[in-house]
Image 1 (cartoon, helix red, strand yellow):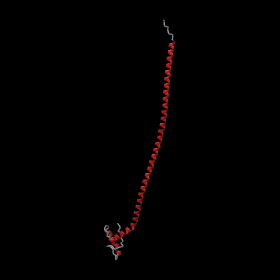
Image 2 (cartoon, helix red, strand yellow):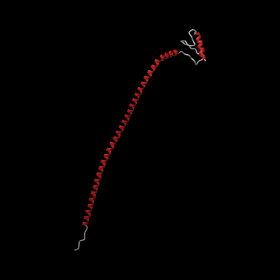
Image 3 (cartoon, one colour):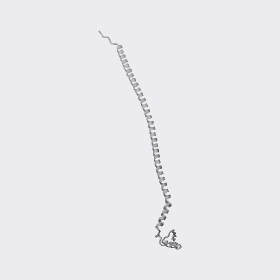
Image 4 (cartoon, helix red, strand yellow):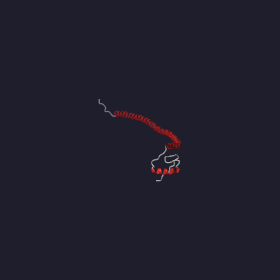
Length: 168
């Protein structure tokens, strides 16, 4: 452990202005004897404290103001970022809504086409039913006419068949 050399600008209990050469030796001796005990004048402490504060305080205050400004700017940036995120979400929701409308339009057109096709099929089935009914009526009419024709032919044949004469 090396002895510590301390120089004081003001007088301390160990040094005096008369004994300046002696003071360095006594400070070394005092320092090596009791490193934990240091006697310092309160006035010196106050002046050193004031000097230290006056030296660093303007820079610290400037740094504090700069940090406050940065914090405010950061808050503003966070708010702006949040607003932009909200805008992007709205844009995405608009895109989703547009996609839904496009899909709805597609299915609406599909339903309209199906409805047209069903109406066309209904018309065709109605025409086919009418035609089938007409054909059925025509066949029934033809069947009746054939039946009547056959009955007429049978009646004619009966009339043509020789009848035995009645004996009187």
